[in-house]
Image (cartoon, rainbow, N blue to C red; front, side, top):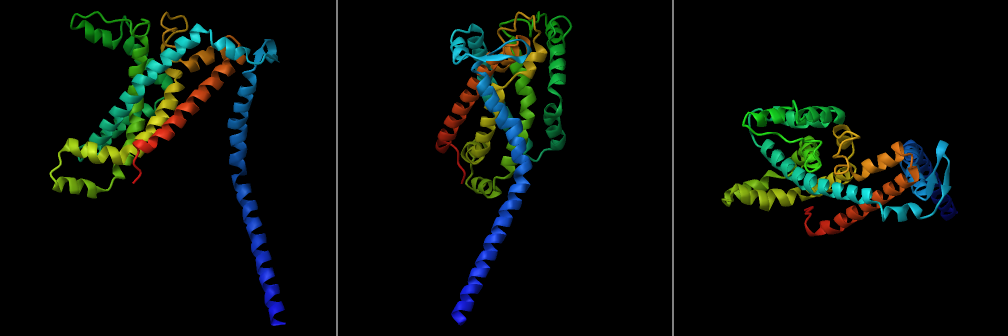
Length: 310
């Protein structure tokens, strides 16, 4: 008799536990539903639409027809696309490593006990909270060949300044300078947080052993900062692949330097919103997404060789 009562109690407790567990799951799904819905509507659904549109050709009034792989075949013979890939590659090669190096350097310097470091941190971070359009307009004025500040300073030394944003040979590098300048502050803050998370005991032990500043930096700081460097590298690469605003604001539509400065995203913009060739623009976006995914996957695979999480 007692055994039957105990068995019934156990079944009752088990049933209540299952009911409570189902209730917890229900409310958990309710809580995350708005986020998941927003993620699907604003991210996943546009990706699926873009993938579908990449196999179509668009006409007037949003009408489109299925053309299969024609857009992708067209990309193989598009000289403008190859030029934009070259421009984007040059932009990445310069902005990512130089930007990361300068950000680490500034972060290390501003992590020391120096007077006014809060002011310096603020000054370096100001470009991050400034509108990209405002940054582009200010630098466009600085780069102006006729009355810009840079050419005026060069004229004081008897040097005739170049056409910074209209000369096809140097326009892209002028944009690269602005991109590096405006991105250092953001990465600096991330590196500062990483530096402040390194235990002081390592530096104290190195000081006791008589290690110099360069030894400490390369043997302690960099290895322990490698997870942060890895994160910043991935984010910087993704951001560099998507560069658009500086080019759009600093290079005029009729500029002779446009061909030598337009990025992949700028070419996407041209086809999607200027030429109304949305099918081909979607194909460009899909290829860009695949390239970013592949490069990110390679970085994830290679991180085991140089990223130290211990």
